[in-house]
Image (cartoon, rainbow, N blue to C red):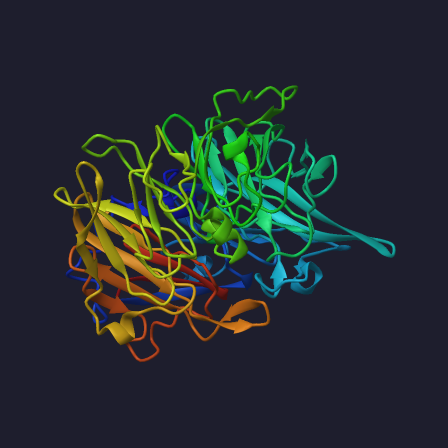
Length: 526
């Protein structure tokens, strides 16, 4: 499990899970095995690599955990006894005069109590490198600056590679907020989405801290081997806002290397020849990106989709960019190359990646796309997962204030509203609060499909929301949506720790890894 939501399509599926089954995932056979303490909140998804040779410490299956206290940990993924009671290695990016960024500095409380590492790192298994972005506040005398750095760490030792780290900067010419040159301000921008590694380039997306200050959505690319900046894209260069935050999900990519993301509230004028893409699903072509350090490419927009009611979504703060795009595997029918996404209003959009539809000026519908299902789910501060049992191809969503839902894909193609399932628990108890959850799937190919969600119910606090109490891990049969297990069933035995908003579990080799407040919890067969 090397990247956000398991793969570049962001399917959320691990199809090589042979140990966990629908028969043994229950509270008598499955539960929390152990935990590891860490020094900060874990917003980033844990990552997993088997068979790593640690210098002077043998071969281990390793789980990697990044914290908001600007620290990366490597733990033995299966054991915490004896020498494995401590990290195999850990790296802190703090030093004298360098701290994390206090939440109060940003004017928002979307990430608490501090900001360090928020976006899920990405691992290149071929080179044995973990790429991670750290945010710091740095003092010199009475003055201070805010900085983002891209680090490339050896997965065996934590050592910096390729001459790193490098300071992340970006600018583009424009006429919008920020004047004639838009600059990526490290205080006003939040690196929330998971990192993307495709065709030798690490892509890093940025949004904002709430709607505070002057900001834009950014996507910046760095050569994975040299850490030279090679590509940049600004969502609203002649306007404002258009954040890329996606509730932590990473931008997706198809097998050709095209990149897909959903942008948040912001200016939109692409339908009249402009270059601003607020509240849109954007497809960027990367074929022109060169890994030469002398070439910096502005990523071209290959296609886009913007809902017909974009102006309403924008004015009502109903970001499309609260969700994220999922690139589906080829489907039967007239449009085999599909993408699915949703946003705060709960409309599911099914798009043809070869012809995404642009903007329909009719003002009443999105009839030009494959399908739109208005308010099909609770508002989406999350993303979908996908699994096929060999007979049914299914998309799973768990919206805010809603139950887990499964939508079947059928030719020509489309989502069949008559073949929609709900989780089979008493509905009053099975609905999650805000923000809902991003489902993940474990399966042995087309069998023993299990849907996993993390419940992190949050309550309003000022202009933000803060999780309350402990996280709850849920497991459902992927075919029937019957709940198999949840971590409250064993009378406190399986408490993962304090809830962290938008977190996603990682399932690998018979274990489930859950990030929490200053803790990693490891679940498996008892």
